[in-house]
Length: 370
Image (cartoon, rainbow, N blue to C red; front, top):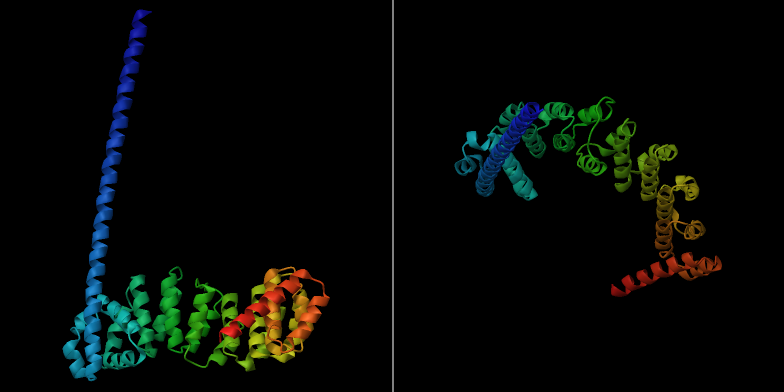
């Protein structure tokens, strides 16, 4: 019995030792890997900082030269102070140039654009648009828009549709197309059911607002887009810009199943003061969604506050605080406020009375400060 036990103990000791050695080796390799990773990350960080510093120096140099060029006013004098073309129209140079143009006042930027066009910058930009670096392309297409290079709108549209997963490229390319007034390409992209744009609702509004062509024509066409965000952005912009000849087109969206679209349509019609839709909008005061009811209150107050005073008093008793607040804000603008107070008091609704009292008190304080 002694021999087997000794053999077993020896084998156990051998296995334990090998396991211990394997663990030590694993820890050592892990430590070395982590050190290498830290060195790589540190090196990347230093490299990125150096690139950023070089770009910042180049941007400052180009900015200083550009301002001198603008003061000079002529191409010949401008070229004597600007960096050489191979540097100015290099990748780093164009990226810096885009930053510089964006930071200039409108008059200076216009003068610099003229100088750059005389220096045949469009040829260099067209060449750089072939790049496969999407971050760089975002800066170049922005420059295409800033320089109003309409002949490059087709390539800009191609880049936008190709970079389906890069939000920055999509935004800059779409914004450039808007600044170029590129109706056909914008419509082609927005009406393409197979293209799913990634931009936020706010970004789309910025893009559409930047459009330099016939806005009513563009909005009217895009109201049939399969993309609800595009439709909403056009409805909202049409309301903000009070494009009344689109009122009937927008009124049709009051039947839309998407409640956000309905809200945008209600607010747009209110901004346009489209009286023909007032009764339909009043019907939304009974909608199950408080957001819709709140929008209806705002719209009715804009369309005809005096005609819908009683409806707004009823909305002042809504279960949702925001709807009551909207109603109170609207009613505080009624000239015969004493009559409104009497009608609200007659409802014996404490929340309605308190809301109207709070709103009118705040309105009185603001008027007193003026």
